[in-house]
Structure formats: structure tokens, C-alpha cells
Length: 178
Image (cartoon, rainbow, N blue to C red; front, side, top):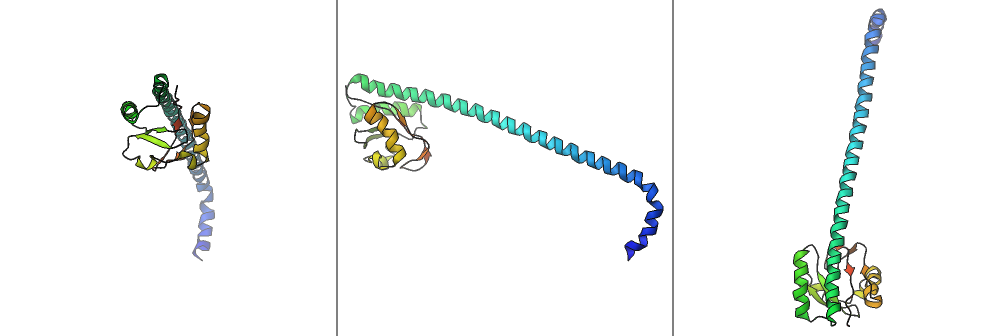
């Protein structure tokens, strides 16, 4: 009812308000288009920034991991050079130094040829792995463990669940009797 009553008034003023409505509508449309462009540009800039920072972090992590793995290679080559499997106290003394340098290592373990963990440093937090036969812990571990124990070459798991909790990657390096 009331809307129909306004129709004659609207027709009377139509010619006067068409131009301001068109200009106002055009400005509103241009504002929305500009805002959308700015939003997309900001999103792309943030995406590129995050990707670049992610690449930098990955490169630093890869470099650090390679350096730490090289240090562990020196650790195992020391025992290979000595020509005997280390005693418990020899192992602990040497492992302590490496663990102090690379404290993010969950542990440094010695695994016998049957796949059983016979030494682990530090013992605190890792007691649950001592005496465990790792061949029984899953196919990913078995495959990585065969490389050093059977073939005498390095082995590494993908990201796996640790027996003592948490997740990560395990590198297995061979120590051989001379």
C-alpha cells in the first residue's frame, strides 16, 4: 500500500536522481573492485613471504641435519677405527659428548646384530627402548635397520612414532668389529 503511494513521487523525481544514483553506484562498484584487488594482492604477498621463509627454514634444517649426521658418522668411524665394539662405559662417555652437542637427539643407541638395543644414552626417558628388538617394531624400522646391520651401510626411517613416545626420523649407522 504505502509503496504504491510513493510511485507517483518517484516518477516525478526520477530524472533528477538517476545521475547521482549512477555516479554513486559506479563509485561503490569501483571501490569494491579495488578492495578485492588489494585483498588478492595482499594474500599473494603473504603467501610468497611464507613460502620464502619456509624454504629458508627447510634449507637451514637440511644443512644442520647434514652436519649432525656427519658428526655421527665420525662417531661410528671412531669405533670402526678402534676395531672393537665399545664397552658400556666407553659408549656412554663418547655418546654423552655427542648428545651434549646435539641435545635435540632423542638418544644415541647401540644396537646389536640381532636388532636389540643394548646401550642407550641418555638412559633417562629412554629406558623403554633398552632391550627391545627393533626388528619387531615395524616394517619401516626393519627396512632401515637392515641397511647397517646386514649390508653395512647407513639406514634412515621416514617420520615414525618413537617407541618411547613422540615422532621423528631415526638414522642407523653401522659400527663393525674389525
